[in-house]
Amino acid sequence: MKIIDIEVIPISLPLSSRYDNAAGRRRMYDIDQQVAVKIHTDAGITGHGSYEDRPDIAPSEMEPLIDTNPSTICTTTITSPSAECEKQVLTEMADSLPNLAMDDTVWAAAFDLARQARIQGYTVPATDLAIIACAHRHGVSLEHVDSHLQVLQTL
Image (tube, rainbow, N blue to C red; front, side, top):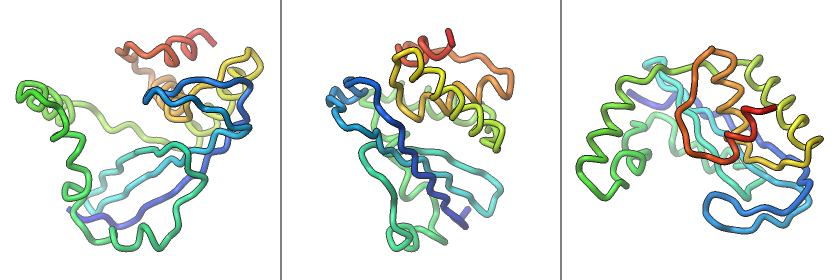
């Protein structure tokens, strides 16, 4: 399997208030800049990711990744857990979970959800907006312990 294309989607959301992100860093900018990334493979598999505190990624940073095996650059997902049993559980989950499309309907719903959240005074990570919108679009439920996702599910 090889990477054939990488899409970069810059996301700039106005912050209504300061907040602490998942890494414990206080976000104090007027605009919350994040990047969503879609990685397409020749096997028809599409992966998704994100990066905070970055307005965009230059094409020159992505070009060296084309025609590489994604497992050589994405190993932290499986290798970062400290316990072997955690690695096994994550591997089994990755093999059994469906790949849900992030189509235009999902992105439109995510932007609408961001607007609704801001109106009610909530600032949430763009990745959480995309997760909730995708789950709603495909009619799947989420199991989580994420306070942002809990707030979004009430909107």
